[in-house]
Image 1 (cartoon, rainbow, N blue to C red):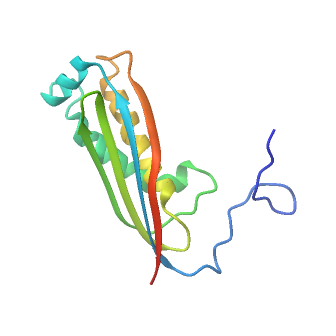
Image 2 (spheres, rainbow, N blue to C red):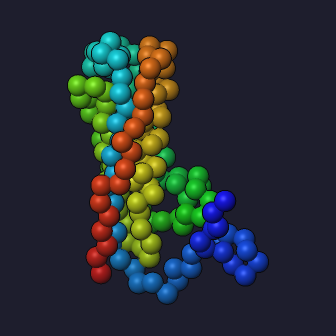
Image 3 (cartoon, one colour):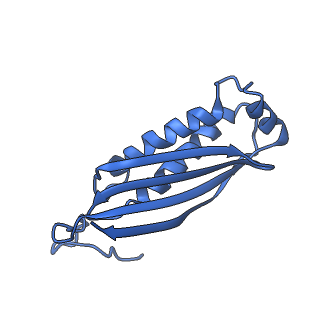
Length: 150
């Protein structure tokens, strides 16, 4: 079993103290994909899924999920998010989700970008599960993260 990397003197996990760090403009981009059957892709393209407009609902769900990251991941700091963009697009094998997140803060915003992508993909899975039993979520990864002094 691996040891926790951030622990207090009692051995219990704690949030990293970022109080001494400077405020910076922080940006992160993430992506992910869900592989779907051709018939499912066509239903989405024609907006004929029973639960509604899959791509729009996934984008909105991704934004909501990204905003709630610190409530979902226990040691994540709550951030003052200044931009959260989630885009869903059909491709030949399914749907690609891309997110862009930005904040001015003392810690990175990559977890919010990854959470936004993950929630958007899970939303697609939920909306399509009656039509497609072989969906695969994969390729969830951070594309970039930057920080700039203010």
